[in-house]
Amino acid sequence: MKKLLVIGFVWPEPNSSAAGSRMMQLIGLFQNQGYEVTFASAAQDSDFMVDLSNFGIHKVAIKLNDSSFDAFVKAMQPNVVLFDRFMIEEQFGWRVIENCPDAVRLLDTEDLHCLRIARQKAFKQNRPFSINDLLVEDVAKREIACILRCDLTLMISEFEMDLLQTVFKIDPSLLFYLPILLDAVEASFEKKLPSFEEREGFVFIGNFLHEPNWNAVQYLKETIWPKILQKLPNATLKIYGSYPSQKVLQLHQPKTNFFIMGRAEDAQEVVQQSKVVLAPLRFGAGIKGKLLEAMQTGTPNVTTTIGAESMQGDLPWSGYVSDAVEEFVDAAVQLYTDKSSWLTSQQNGFSILYKRYQKDLFEGIFIERLQHLLATIAEHRRNNFYGALLQHHTLASTKYMSKWIEAKNK
Image (cartoon, rainbow, N blue to C red; front, side, top):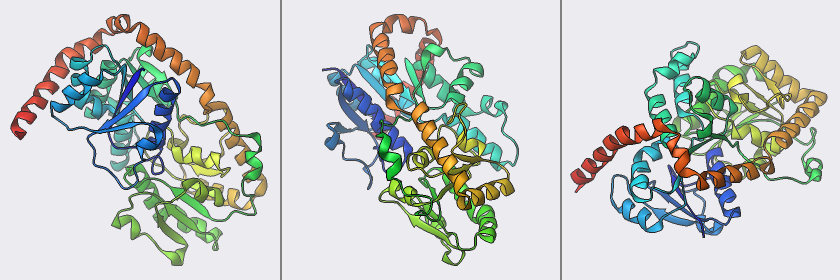
């Protein structure tokens, strides 16, 4: 049986974040091809982590800067190793190369971290983001090096695919576009959703460990919600998300119909009962799981350019996109009160889901690409000279730093 080793940044929490859902989707693709899957991580167990054994996945706890990983991976000899984010490849990539050099090495970026961080810095400095911000960002140098060292990097955003090829000159053979994937649904599912009249309230949902989400909630509380409330005094806004800190909980203010609800036991149910999703994201990267979830539940949304980035292609948006406060507020009120606009936006969302995120659009071509890579890995690596160069130099320094830390810990 073919073997997949996933080395995770954290244990998957599919009910807490889009990243957790994404990871379980990727594992499912491999299991459908008959792979035996092992998920290893140095992270602590968490309250909301999925029980991997329920999905037939072996769970293995590993240590950072510890040669016990070498023995583990050498004994396992996986056919494919999937690194969950670039920091994990930095930690374990050289050990995989030394102990199972023939394994195909995949990197799943989730989103392009350097883009998110550079945008966040520009935002906090109260200036527009520019491509030059990426070129001077230290994280970009680390992340691009990881992409070059790996055999194939999975990207969820077409914008980021283009950025890597045009700005960083990454060869297309090292990249593969694989967005968040959705299972096919019955045509009748739309009729089972609550109607415009059956829904009420606005909603925001997002993991609070993710800085763009926390910033968006602050923006809602301080700037956007007071203006919406002036026009819709009886409307409510409920904020859901895992891991709310004390500063998040302090925003709870029932007298202004602004409610901090904490973690949603069933995120889809919460969004499905709401009339409109608000997602005023001012920085970030990747594609937004919360907006896909809105489309899946037939809930129109108002978001920003960053929020909608790379999600719709040339299709009309499932609501409105605006970076201006007054336009954002007017769009929210329009969707909330005008059934015709609401229904049109809902149908736009269904169209985006069907044409851009169905699993069967991508599963076959991904497996075909992977099989070709497995069959031609030696040639593929010969054509990636810069990757070999970085392995020779960068990984040598990473390797000996790790060995020094291990010796020091003893």
